Image 1 (cartoon, rainbow, N blue to C red):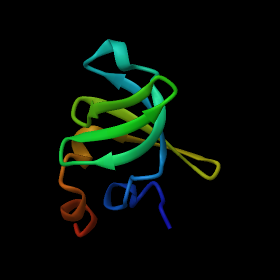
Image 2: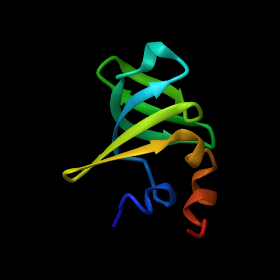
Image 3: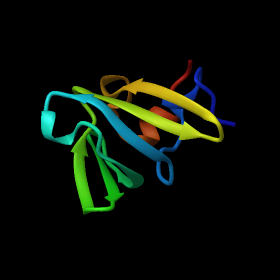
Length: 88
């Protein structure tokens, strides 16, 4: 189960997300579903189409059940399989 304490070690594909803050002011507020992930990027399916967004220098809000979890992109800037295997 994904919680605020372990979200950085979980799979992000399929989660709904919103950008709360970013070095790129144009993407703040963008939201969608993560459809692919690399070491440094998320690919989001948004109402405006598919967008590639860098993880670094971005604050992400994830919606899980009724919870809202906020993650600093620099904490998840690893290859997915490396991050998932990390110890807490």
